[in-house]
View (cartoon, helix red, strand yellow):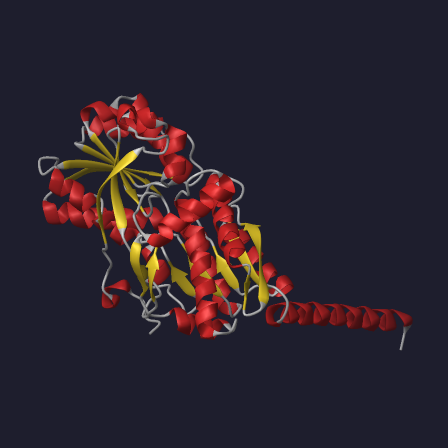
Length: 403
């Protein structure tokens, strides 16, 4: 054998050995030592604020339990940058290098859909707060669970009650992020418009990288709607609302934000900009449930502030997996999945249930209205809760064929 061939064989043997060691190391981590969790969320980019609070939510849950089945709990935060390709790579690396099988994250629907598929390939579990109907619909899988109400329910609990409250408001304009989440909200809204004889006088699409919304606001003004419906999220939603108010739109029409990020968003806007605006929300820290009261106390004790949606969502997603491990009596993901399916529990929003057929948590969604600053009882009392309810597509309408 020539020297070059010997060197190549030696190199390949060394590589194979190193890959084998890495695989055995990940396997060892998965079956002994700390139970590894991961929080794959945007820690950079336009949605970094949501990622930052999601990180804190997982930390609270991990520290609350400390250890499970006589094994310590550990976690790492993975910066997805809000990009599906980056998110998939980070999940792959965490599964292969650290033996991670339990993932809670995915702020954006595109990254969540991609990570759910990757978690299934890795033999893990992924719990998310992202909104696209497809997550527990046509793209559902055995590994993916969702705590948040999907886009259909968010619109049913915001557009429908507001339309009922304001029967003379027959002209609606929408501003929509052009990706699966925005399209889901828009489609659900159009169905209600059609049912109630509401004229959809226009829609403006924008990209996920858009930062300047004045052009869309100008188009909305020109359409002279009775209601401006904002279907974007996070910083983009806050920027759109800020510019709409600077144009004086709140003085001559109603503004509804279908999916607010809650306290963090209200703090960035301030009470003056929130006053009179309607907001849809997955979570609000004043909800009177035992688990929520406990979370509020833990958050204030640890961080000195009330939990917002991003923190609370990450906390409950992580807690669900830990409770699933305890119920199953093992960290074997398939057993944990089986333990979670059909589970009913006292949740942050009251009684919650993991629907077995599609892994969707059945929970409340809230319609809020911004208070005047003079009416606020404390620094976080930005809104009053007008209504709460549960709206979910029946299984045969979701498109989920997993069962």
